[in-house]
Image (cartoon, rainbow, N blue to C red; front, side):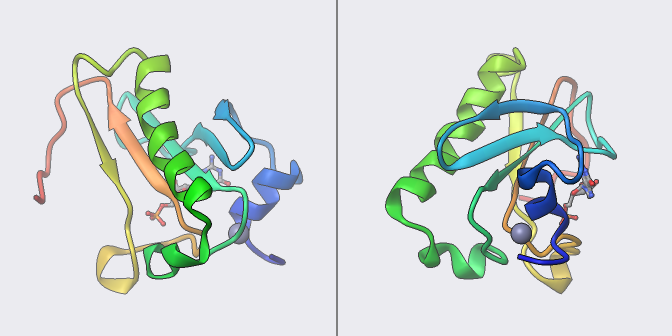
Length: 114
Ligand code: 5GP
Ligand code: ZN
């Protein structure tokens, strides 16, 4: 998708620090971390947000959730705890219009919303 920052990260046109990758997803460090560990997980195929989740195959959907858990293990925060967040649409301040999940941890998290 032209003019999508995350599609450019997938293609390598924009550099990123990769944490994990499989056939369907890419995980990389957030450029503006909100916690000691802050990793962004994206499907390699462009969909805008959770509103388009059904446009992904079941393999892609499962790969995203699996990657969240895998990233927590790789980052060593699976036992201390972490949060998985996907901002969808204006009220949630979604700033990049390519579906993504944040994995946050590595310290006590503030601003609990749910
Ligand atoms: P959102 O606000 O849409 O939930 O999350 C988008 C996230 O992408 C933000 O946390 C922001 O810091 C991150 N981000 C935006 N542009 C880039 C980039 O070029 N590289 C990386 N690594 N992260 C980015
Ligand atoms: Zn995209």
